[in-house]
Length: 141
Figure 1 (cartoon, rainbow, N blue to C red):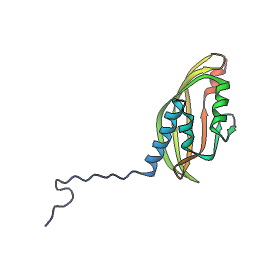
Figure 2 (cartoon, rainbow, N blue to C red):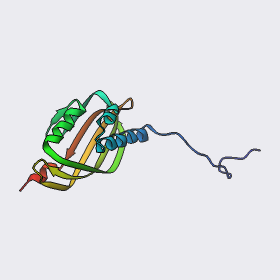
Figure 3 (tube, rainbow, N blue to C red):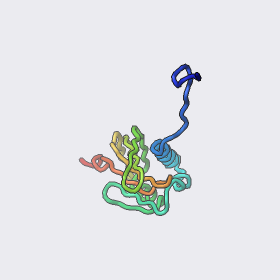
Figure 4 (spheres, one colour):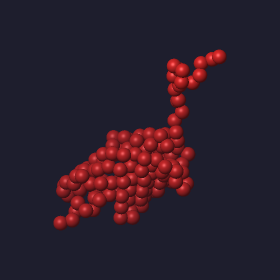
């Protein structure tokens, strides 16, 4: 009789889940954005892709989103602490949370600001990004 599974045999599973692939795609998008590599980031996004940020500001092109940020901030650095993926209406959702730091256009610094991004992916592309943060709270006072 042949050896049974568990009798000293090693079984390696090479399959990746759609959730893991989606998280990897979002990580690549974050890496490209941090490196100011908009062309690579754009290849990970569908056309059109809707981006909505705190305050209800809405964009359909990555360049519009980046230009809006350039008018508001001298610098923004996001640290991603957690990635989670789940099924969602219309695709797979990847939630990313963390803290950001940087400076407003007038040079006033901010740090320790909580944020959450929700990416909706369909057919291996980002079709929607919604982002929320406590950044407005740093301007109080």
